Structure formats: C-alpha cells, structure tokens
Length: 279
Image (cartoon, rainbow, N blue to C red; front, top):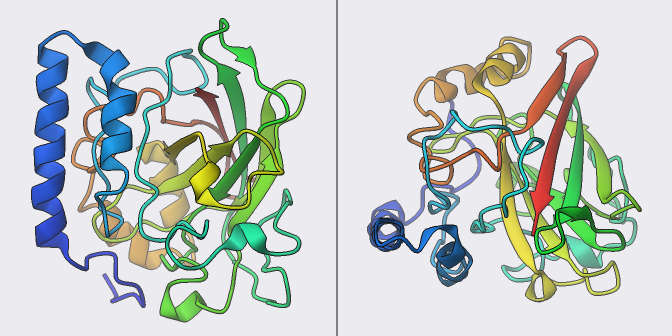
C-alpha cells in the first residue's frame, strides 16, 4: 500500500498491549455471565485509552455472522472515537464551524473549499430508545466523520489538514433518522472500512465531544467494499482490504452484528447504507 500522509500506526505497540488487556477483561465479564449489560461501563472506560485509530473491541459474538444493524434492537456497542474525532476533544473542532450542520458532507465549509471525490454514498442512521421498545428518538443530534478516498482524515492528515470535508451533524427527525450524502471511504492499514459517529442530546449541545451520550462505528459488508475498491481512485484500498477482515479488525472482531450496515445500490448509481442505532 502507498504510504499515506497520516499517522494511524503511531505508538501501536503500546496501544496493542493496553487494548489486549481491555479486551481480556471484557471477555472475562462475558464468561461470568454479565453479558451486554456490563459493556457500556467497560466501553466508556476504554474510550480514552486509544491514541491511534486501532480501536478496541466491543460486544460479543462472531463478526460478520449476525443480523445487520437495521434488523436488531440491541444497544449499539460503545467504541473509541479514535485520534481524529474533530469534536474538540483532540485538537480540531468541526462542531464549532459555521455550516457544519448539513446533510451533504462532501465539501468543506467555513472558508475551506476542498471536495472529497469518490463513489457517492447515502448513509441513513435511525436513532432508537432501547429502554422504550426501540421507539424512534427525535430531536437528538448525530455527528459523523470518516476518511476520504485516499485514507486521509480532514483537519488532521497532512494532505487534508486545511479541509473539513466528510464531517457533519444533523438533528434526528420524528422517525429518528438522519441522512447524510458522502463518499465511500478508503480502507487504510490496520482497520476495516468504517464510519465514526457520536450521538448528542440536542443540536444545542453538539458543540463538543464532552457532551456526547454515545460513540460508535458503522462497518461495511465485504462484498460492498470489494465492489467499491475495484473502481478508479480506490486502487490503494484493494491491497489493504486483503490484509484485514471483520474477524481481525480491533473494533469489529468480537461482534459486528449491531454495526454492520444494510447496503443497497452499486458503484454506478451510488451506495445506500442503513443502520439502526439503539441507545
């Protein structure tokens, strides 16, 4: 894979040791029968452990074999936000930018002019209340972000440090949904293709990651990734995808059933990803 202008692997040896200890404690709790009820606490404890995007495990089960996030009402696993959240907790704060509340996140805002090229992707997240029969939650805010076609994160990676594309926040509608127009992200070293997101109680407080109530990630099915990466512009992702899997990814390896998007569409007309997000 061509070397990218980002530093996802900085401090990897140190992080792997800490993540291994974290994962071991979570598996022990599952073995003792505490199940998913203990995971939110553990996930919160681990969310500040990671200094790279080699993120920790969450959930339990076999990756890639469960139902997609659109077919289940189980609480979505809590995940690390990684090193490039752009929510003010690690330097840059996209949430403070004029124009960041938007549905189309392909172009930079607030004076930046860059546009992220790639296969069009529509992402619809449906926020649900796990304590109320998974009723839709209206009036909350969801912030999403992901890397571009070259694997760069805006506001952080050297090649996109002056841009803020592929970041945006919206308020959930009456049916609990938010829909973003974006591009299919790259696959970079060490991670399965994914999208990050944070949930906030309202748009008013969606100004800093300190106010979030949930953090997780969306995963893409392998067949969709293979189709996307066979197109022009994604050449570097082909080899990288072959080196990782849902069962080896450090976020999705123990379970992806609540995070695997339901996909439709194709490379010609664009893809559509849907995921239920139960909190």
